[in-house]
Length: 416
Ligand code: HGY
Ligand code: MN
Ligand code: MN
Image (cartoon, rainbow, N blue to C red):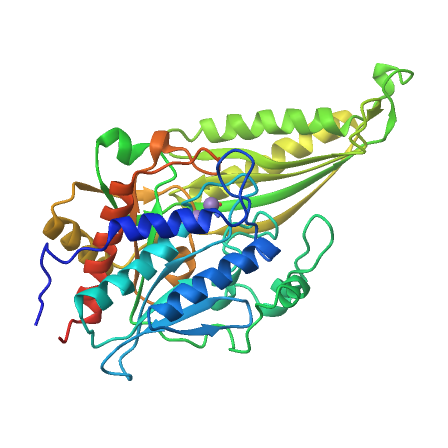
């Protein structure tokens, strides 16, 4: 019977080919991807993933949030499955690897076990979580959040995109709403492979990041209301310029994040001004402030100061303001046992590794509430992500999937 040793490795060439094939679906305009959740491109990517899973001998489950569960093997059907996975949806100007590496790395794990003729006691399930990115439908990690009981399914179904299209209706339209109730599945453990999306691993010359914690996130949507008026004939003292107020608030957001250096971060990536016409003073500005920190108290301080400072700015300018919390989760500590299994795997395989805190949010941050969970990361070039130029090496992808497979085998128990 094969034992856990450094010879058990995945097929890096096949993983890379699958990544490149998936990247052809929902191509971006600069070499990356635009495969946003619940679009026709998302549906196409899901279908390709399902065909690959079935070819690897899996049966596919689909729940009412469109989460996909490809189940493989398991000599003891009563043993709780070991889950792996991430997300196939991308940012509008996303990369080819964010999320996709975790889903296809999980699939490659199964393909390699088939090649190696290995059987495990616990079944293994590869998951694609719907709408991890939160770009088309806020918040991020929406469907893993419903699975973990953080959001209700009804609330999730009512989320609207910028065109007013509802999540539930779009999920139905693309034909990927399953019948399975969400969150009923029990897991032995959950492992997520993901690119780092930051510069640390590459800068430190490490192949592998063992993710011990995930920083927390807060999304506050701010609506500032002033008055549309002519940019030429309205005297300066009479203006109620919502765009100017937003600029002053965003300056404060940067100041607040810097005041908690070196770990806190803050910015607004979503910004809308209306009527967004060249010769009209903006009467409204809507933007989402994204604060993050490994410390909950810091996040809470940044949220509170945002409201205080922004209120002062609009009061001085005679404008109105409204705040809405549209996303967030507390800092996460991953399961010690799963973290150790990943570290043992990296050691056995001879990959350089270091502990790391995840700067980005991931489905694992919610699943950590449901089962022992941990993440393994590989570097990305210049730490760049959420950009079409996102890049990793075949070697990094292979190392990450090798470590994922060995950690999963330790927990799923090789039986032959
Ligand atoms: O926002 C995040 O951290 C993740 O990319 N959804
Ligand atoms: Mn991701
Ligand atoms: Mn992302």
